[in-house]
Picture (cartoon, rainbow, N blue to C red):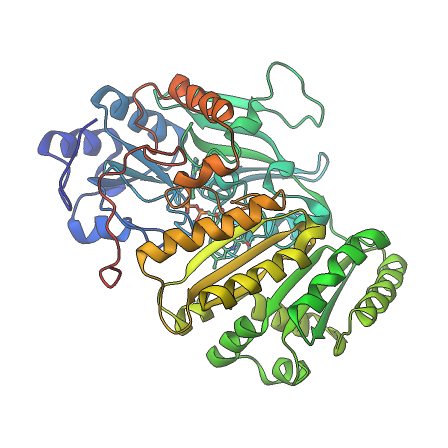
Length: 484
Ligand SMILES: Cc1cc2nc3c(=O)[nH]c(=O)nc-3n(C[C@H](O)[C@H](O)[C@H](O)COP(=O)(O)OP(=O)(O)OC[C@H]3O[C@@H](n4cnc5c(N)ncnc54)[C@H](O)[C@@H]3O)c2cc1C
C-alpha cells in the first residue's frame, strides 16, 4: 500500500485522475481543506491525500474501482461524529464523503418503510417520517448531525434501544459498493426474505471496512399515541441503578431510561441549563433518571404509576412528569448536551462506551466507584441504563490521564466489564481506539473468521485500513499536541 508522509497531497496524476472521474467541484486537494476531514469526534486525526464528495452510487463505484487498481486507501465518511476514529484516514489516502447523497427517496406509508441515500441526516429521516404519522425509532444523541450511513456502519444505538432495539433491527435492505467498485443490492422491502445468505446484516456494524453503503431501506413503525417523560431524582447512583432490574421485572418497558450522574449534571448546569429545569432538580440529587414511556394513553398512565412505585422503593427524592412538549424538549436538552458540557470540565477525557447485562448495572456502578477511589480517578457516568449501556468519562482527579495511564485504566475498566459478561463496545464501534482490546470479547477463531471475511471482500486492504482488527498498522495517526 502506498505510504505517505504527513500532510502530503495526492500526486499530480492522482489529482488529474480524480478530477476527471468526478469533476473539480467534488474534489479537495488543498491542505486546509484536507485538514477539515482529518478527524472525527474521537480526537484522533490524520490528514488524507484527497477528499472527494460522491453525489451518486456511480461516483462511489468509480472512486473504488480507481483506488483498487492504484491500491490507494479509501475511508468512507458520513458526518464524522464517530467516537472511535472510524472515519479518520489512518493510512492516508482518499476520504470519500457521503454527505451530498442526502435525498430521502421514499417514505412508503403502505409498507411502513423508507428508502434513503445514506448521507441523509438521522433527524431529517425522523422528522420526515413523523410528518406522515410514522416513526423511525433509532435515536442516537447525535441524531441532529449523524448520517444514516454512519448509523448503519456503526450499528448505532441511542436512547430508545431498550424498547425498540438498535439500528440493525430497522435495516431491511442496502445498496453498497464493494472495494473493487462493484455495486451490490441486499435485502428488500419484504419483512420475510430468506433468498440467499442474510448478507445485509454483515454490512451493518462493519464500520466502513467491507463496503460503502449508498442506499438503505429502513423499517418505520406507527407513531405512538402518547409519550410521557419523567425526571426522577435520587440521592446516589446506586439507588438509581437499583431501579433498572426492578423495572425489567415489572413488565414495564420504557422507551428510554437515561441515567445522568451528579458531575454530568453539574457540567450541564455550568454550561447553561434553563431555569425551570434547574428548579425541578432536588438540591440533594446525585443522580437523575430520565424515563420516557410511550404507547396507548391508558397503558402509559398505568406504567407511569408502576414506575413511580418502583422509584419510591429505591429512595427517590422527587418525581416530575413533563407538563408539555416544550418542557419535554428542555429535559432532553440536558441529556443531549452532556457530551459538549464535559469538554468544558476537562479537555481530554478517556471516554468509554461499555455494555453489561442490564441487571448488572448496580454491580458495575459499585465496581467503578471502587476503581475511582483506589486509583484516585474522576469517573463520570451517564447512559442508556435499560439496555445496560454505560458511557464513562475518566480523568485523574484534576487533570487528563497520561497515555500510559489511559492504557492501564482502559484495561481495568474492560476487565471489570468482561467479568460481568459485558462488551467493551456497546454502540460506538471499535474503530481505531479499541482495536487492540477486541480480543477481550472475541476468541481467536472468531477474530480469524472476521479477518478472512475482510480479506475476501477487500483483498488489497484498501477500504478503511487499520480499523477494528488488533495489530493492523496505522501509519499516520497524530495525537493532539498537549498529550504526552
Ligand atoms: C455528541 C455525540 C453523541 C453521540 N451519541 C450517540 C448515541 O447516543 N448512540 C450512538 O450509537 N452513537 C452516538 N454517537 C456516535 C456517532 O454519532 C455515531 O457512531 C454515528 O452513527 C456516526 O455517524 P456519522 O455519520 O457521523 O459517521 P462517521 O463518523 O462519519 O463514520 C463512522 C463510521 O462509519 C463509516 N461510514 C460512514 N458512512 C458510511 C457509509 N455510507 N458506508 C460505509 N461506511 C460508512 C466510517 O468509515 C466510520 O468507520 C455520538 C457522537 C457524538 C459526537
